[in-house]
Length: 122
Image (cartoon, rainbow, N blue to C red; front, side, top):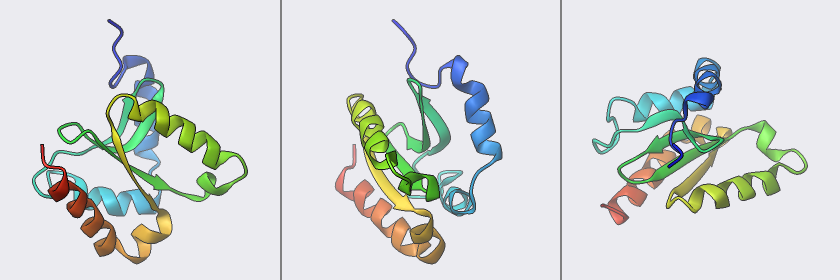
């Protein structure tokens, strides 16, 4: 069976992404790390297949994606949805937030994540 989660061949990409996180990801990570949200363990820059998810909670199979400027250029929306569909085939659920939502309303973002968790407890 081929390893799908956090494949070794994606390690350099994950490490590079962790070292170059945009400000919005840094803000959100500060709230998610060390079981900071409802005592759930989130991982940052977690790979599934050839794709890297911004934040992932294995217990909930929950991906949190932070959409920055590159997600709003022509063709990006279609690529994002294709990628998301593939990842959802592994039973992963997505929550998406923009850089702006996180920067301007981190409490609202955290509320939405907590609501998802409370409504989908394992």
